[in-house]
Amino acid sequence: MGSRASSSGTPGATPRKTKAGKYLTFVLAGEEYGLGILSVREINGLMDITAAPQLPRYVKGFVNLRGQMIPAVDLRLKLGMEETSYTPETCIIVVELKRKLMGIIVDQVSEVLDISAAQIEDAPSFGTMVNANVVLGIGKAKGSAKTLLALDKLFSDEELASVIAAV
Image (cartoon, rainbow, N blue to C red; front, side, top):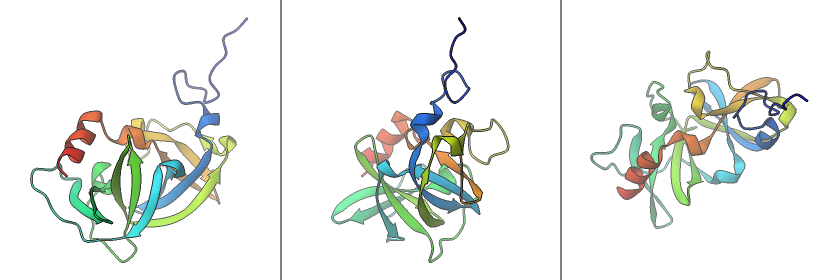
């Protein structure tokens, strides 16, 4: 009797079957990424961002979302990419993370894709601009690869608490 490996092939990794679903895809530095649609609350164009002192560099400040101030995080900076000027295509994706709302600034929103388990491969340990522990997998859809991000792993509990507390 042999032991059974997870469907992802990597012991301890999230099984591929549980990664399948709908993803909001977007562009950062010319590369395509995706976030699970269930954590996305809305998509907005770039809004006025109110700066605040003593925040991490990747937190650009706060935006007023219908009377509620939420942090605005530049995902390029959070992922260690080069900062760039915002353009008319720049968007803020409002996500819910651990029952808190946060705005994530991306270069451009693409589309919502339904990605099956068969279309998702495990994250490579090299060859990507993004730290592998925040990558859920690589989704192959519509003729290209999209790096699927694990939103819950982008921020440590301490980082999230300090950003939210600054509001």
